[in-house]
Image (cartoon, rainbow, N blue to C red; front, side, top):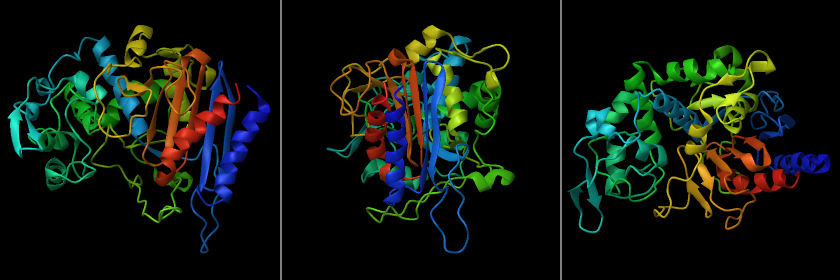
Amino acid sequence: MNPSALARLRSVLQTHVDQGLLPGAVALVHHQGHTVLHTAVGHQRPPSAESAVPAMAPDTVFRIYSMTKPIASLVAMMLMEEGRLLLSHPVSHYLPAFAGQRVYDEATGTTAPVQREATVHDLLRHTAGLSYAWEAGTVPDAYRAARIGSRRHSNAELAAALGPLPLVHQPGTRWEYSRATDVLGAVLEVIEGESLGGILQRRVFGPLGMHETGFAVPAAQQHRLAEAFERDPQTGIGMPLIDVTAPPVFESAGGGLVSTASDYARFLQLMLGRGTAPGPDGLGAPVRLLGRATVDFMTADHLGSLPVAGDILPTGYGFGLGVAVRTATGQATRPGSAGHYSWSGLGGTFFFVDPAEDLFAILLTQAPGQLRYLCELYPALVYAAL
């Protein structure tokens, strides 16, 4: 990759820090089997008059929010390969609270029975008729009244509360970003008979050597945790982040993990390697967690011509099982090859994998208000170096 373009990437991020848009950031680029950039700019948290603020470091810990989703989806693929999970199974096969669901009609204010039950496949591709309840309306109000997403609820309690609530779409008819991956976490716990944190540690983090990824930051390492500005520097909107200083009751498969650039790179090495990654620290035998055909299946577009609700999924992208999938080299407003896949996290984190270029890249910040801008900016800077 072009060294001057990589230097420019770092310089652009530094400029954003200097302009007060980001407290700091960590960028990592991996190309053709080598990490060609792993750099940090700015500080781990906003400047303070009371104490010195540590500089951002390559091993700083970040809340990665929805970048948790592809990891949980990987575990579902592993269980599918073992014959312990069928994507065609109704969610109610694992979670009885999802039996007999009904769909709310905003126009009439009434509900109707589902035409077919939501399946595990629907959970993975966000076509289960669920929502994130970010907007106003009858169904979002019901989510809020049931405290869906409360960090005081376990995954089982989330599923029990969410299952009886009305859906916003008939299952399988529309993509809408939602609590579906959190429900998937409850399914994984039922199958494995173990907490989601334990499942991820045993199946993914341990084998890949992702020693600093989990649902909380140990007390001895909390000085390495990145923080956001109290308010977005452009809009003034408050930006509270989840508390990760103690193990949560809610181990959210949809958005609860913390990680570092090096740790998440281990996961992306596995994905780029189509299910196989080098041994931790480059030592020992390669680690195989998934078959290459299964990774190809996971990262293919599973939407086709289905309509998309909202503007979270960019133009030019479909959706696979836990990741957005580029359907053509053109059409989108950011560079990328057809077959490139990606996702981001609410706190200000983003990754993409481009198999055609043997490339993946990670950007970690804690700047929620800048996320959409960074998702456009970062690929342009990375692809400029090819």
